[in-house]
Image (cartoon, rainbow, N blue to C red; front, top):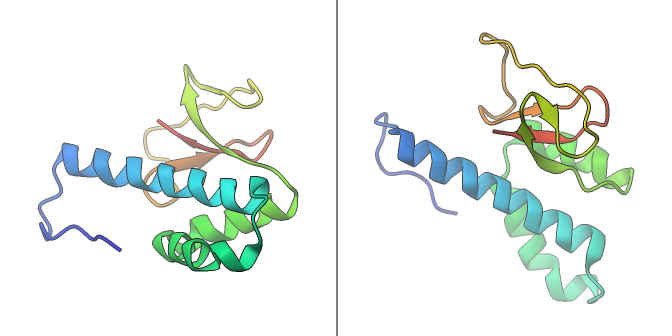
Length: 113
């Protein structure tokens, strides 16, 4: 697990790196849990490691989507979900999940961007 050693000084580029890592972690975890043809024991350490990197609020949503056999991590583009094309307007003061994602009200996809 890599954590920022910069303390309270969170620059824009550091935020982007953290957000990119979070999105990559979710995509990797989706791949292991939904697509993998290898035996689970071979990948269990990697799966646990990826799950440990995720904030608990994201992990709860991820587990729900996995139980529904859905892969749902996608960018939000032009106020629309790129998974279902539903409109997703984020108001300025609206709380984001793990300071990165909003959840599509139509399909449940975790949207970033």
